[in-house]
Image (tube, helix red, strand yellow):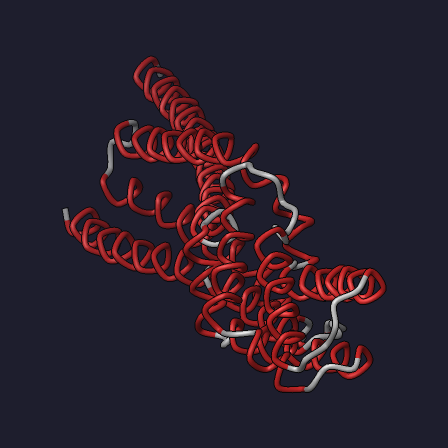
Length: 300
């Protein structure tokens, strides 16, 4: 009888220990799943920061998009067309507008305008050189055409130059860029700090998952969860925007700005897939490692 009672007590103690161990194991699983969730959230935010840093906050990105979209030539053509209309209304020959507007000056003006946003300078389009060159060109035209320069014609020249300058400003300036441009310089340093903090946080979470798990297959399992979750979360917004073809539906009057806008934001959203691809590649590697060590664990 006494032996039966001892055996029963041992059995109850083992069952209690097993239940306690099972609860502890479930609690650890929940904690590690939460850590995987936070890892995916951090990677999602880090991806946004990286895409912003290499696109919206990059002067080279903007200039490259202008060149690839043929923006400079389109601006030159539109500026020339509007100048011809003004020249016609002012009594000049059409050749005057054609000869005055050239690709080099347009590119120089646009690049200077873009540079101002990234260096925290004045974001107004500089018209001083344009007005001076136009004034000299008008006076030269008047001499060639034997037009007498009187006070009345001088007033007409000033009016013509001011109207041409307004056209020039409208063609060189970029409305949607003006909206985001004022935030570029002030938030660039903040973005760098946030990106660095997110990168460190992701490394810390991975280290905690890796070094606090006794079994190697579980280490890779939870890291894989985080990587796959980050890739999936990051894919939602660009996939939604691009699948609905929302960007080309925007209503912009000038052909140059429309092409630039579409090319700029299409590439912006496609850039997310680079981050997604990297995370998926790492997720596949960790999954392979998980399978490898899980098979070793099962066969041990």
